[in-house]
Structure formats: C-alpha cells, structure tokens
Amino acid sequence: MYTHEGAGWHIRAFERHDGQACMSIFMACLRKFPWRGTPRPYVARLIRAIPNARIWVAEEPAAGIIGFITLQPGEAYVDHLFVHQDWRFCGVGRGLLEVARENAGKPLTLDVDTQNFGARKAYESLGWRVAASAGDGNGRGQIRLVSP
Ligand SMILES: CC(C)(COP(=O)(O)OP(=O)(O)OC[C@H]1O[C@@H](n2cnc3c(N)ncnc32)[C@H](O)[C@@H]1OP(=O)(O)O)[C@@H](O)C(=O)NCCC(=O)NCCS
Image (cartoon, rainbow, N blue to C red; front, side, top):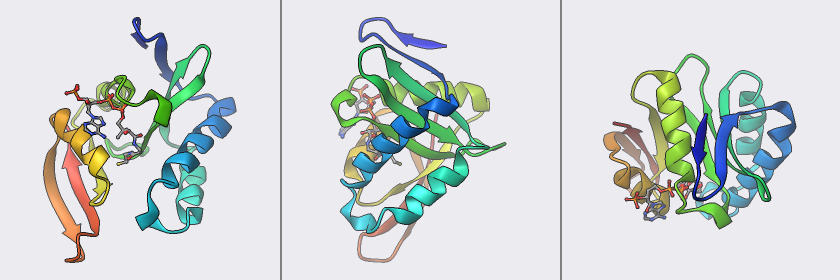
C-alpha cells in the first residue's frame, strides 16, 4: 500500500491484532500531553472508535507497529495520528496522512491542541492550514486544520 524502501517500514490496513500495539503507542504519547490530564476519556474514545473507523498502521519488520491513524467513518476527519517516539522524523506521519488523504478522496481535517507545538510544526511543514481556532484565551484549546 505504501512502503518506505529506505527505512524498511510500510503502511497497511489495521487488523484486529494490532489493537494492543496501537494502544501502547497512544498511551506513551498521552503521557507527553500533561495539559490533557487523565488519559481515561481519550483511551475510551479510541476504544470506541476502533470498530468503525478506517485505520491504517505503519509497521517495521523488527519493531512491529510504529504508528497509526484513524479516520472517522464516512468523514475525512482524522481522530488519531500517533507515531512511536523512536520513529519520529522518519516520514511515518507523512505517509499515514498521505494514505488517509488518498482514501478520503478530499482534504483531511483535524483538531490539534494549541499546546502541541511539535504536531503543529509537523502539520505546517506538510502544508496544512488553519481553518479555525477555539481557545480559552489562555493559550489552551484546539485549532482546526485542513490538509492540502
Ligand atoms: C505529529 C507526529 C504525528 C508527526 O509524525 P512524524 O512521523 O514524526 O512526522 P514526519 O517524519 O512525517 O514529518 C513530517 C514533516 O513534519 C516535520 N516535523 C515532524 N515533527 C516535527 C516537530 N516536532 N517539530 C518540527 N517539525 C516537525 C518533519 O521535519 C517533516 O517536515 P519536512 O518534510 O519538511 O522535513 C508525531 O510527532 C507524533 O506522533 N506526535 C505525538 C502525537 C501527536 O501529537 N499527534 C497529533 C495529534 S493532532
């Protein structure tokens, strides 16, 4: 479906047995989002999303699952995009977004936390633009972004 020959990973559709690996990447990422507080509601949201969402995973033969993306059913909205910390800056996020964009057939949207500067920079590098922002006046909130 999408292979990065140099780095050795590829992207494929999610299979049920990938759930635990995706959850573990997700939990590790959430620990780096102190502004979000308890992970419980976000974990519950991912568990609810899995049965119906369109999901793709990036997999490397030795490391296993190194990232995943979920698209809301019937929508071009990205609910989750998470790449294992050891595999960042390798094009995995770009690849997952490209596969989702192609599948959606139209520009993607997502909401990024205002405080998530790393992700905001990544989307900026990828040519995403701001569609709207909803802050609380104290630099907290989310920004709606649209892909090329
Ligand atoms: C955001 C995230 C998905 C990016 O994934 P990634 O695989 O590292 O991204 P890529 O390697 O495909 O990089 C794509 C572009 O963004 C840039 N980029 C990625 N992370 C960046 C960062 N933290 N700071 C600055 N630029 C960054 C890359 O340099 C690249 O740009 P280039 O092609 O011009 O060099 C990843 O950092 C992540 O999982 N973060 C934690 C979870 C998260 O915040 N998810 C998003 C929720 S909305």
